[in-house]
Image (cartoon, rainbow, N blue to C red; front, side, top):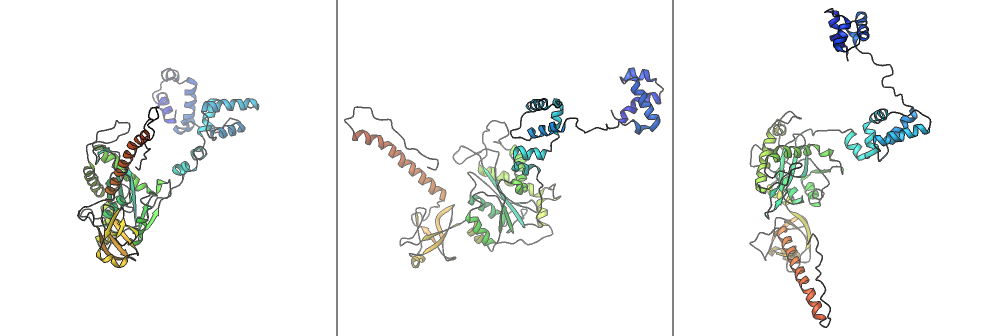
Length: 460
């Protein structure tokens, strides 16, 4: 009971002249206590009614050796329960002739331990770093100085290309200074260098929507250690565009906190309102949207996000990016950007019948002088019906797959056809193996062995 509550009771005696005996009966406070409060009030006024702290407050009355024993057990991995810890402490105190502490005393000593010390001792340096280590949060000094790029698997089911439920991914490119989303890509399947390249292409080049002003080449691109980000393709592209790649420390997502918070915003504000949302603890929903429909929904949300006020910077991401007006660093042309981002370089030797690549044969009349020489080819994984040929970084020509001159083929189409052909051949082998065994040994009266199918693997 603080001094103000004591005065509310004592005031009835001081101002209203109610006897202390009657006041004790009505309030439940003893007459002796009321007399002591009255004397304190007469001597020191209202401030004297405030309770005084005990002189031994905070001091442990448990033996120091017992405290050390309790703390040692509490910091030992695996940590025993409080009941076990109290039982072991009592046994140790009796064995050494010290007073046994109560359960409450043991609990108080354990709770008084520094949380950072407990985390480091029981969960290791990684957990300590993520929870208690000092973090320096910085912001880029100007737009396009630092961009962040990352992926997330969205908490929603859509109708996949084969009609089955599919869980899509989202790649976003964010400007660190303004928090503006400069580009994005919604796709199915695992993240790949091509999907990253498409998101970067949209982020760098000018948009058709004048309200989406963010564009240009960043000075620094901050990415994680995903295979698509660490690919030689992205590294070569960064060199050509004069972009410095910085990889975050493995298993430390703090460096990507801003883009991770945007992913959380997408999940909580957009996906919860879409059909097929995967909520915590909910049953598997029925997908309704397809990939283009989800892409439109994400695009509309990003447009709203870029124009609403960001609480941390006090302005909308678009206004923070535009600022007082400035000119971003741009590629020479969209063709140059596509040639860097959307094509993959590799080396091939020019054969007499053309360039052999991915099971296809590419020819062009201007390649005749290069028979027997190694050339560099660039190809678009979305369309491998033609390739671009370079001799020592100098563009030579476009070579065409003569077997499919008017058909647009993607690398995925070719890989799918190969996989289907392998599976067809394996089924044929499995069908013929038991037949061959039976014909080779017609005199054996024993029943034919059970058919054994060849083991197939995921990549088949």
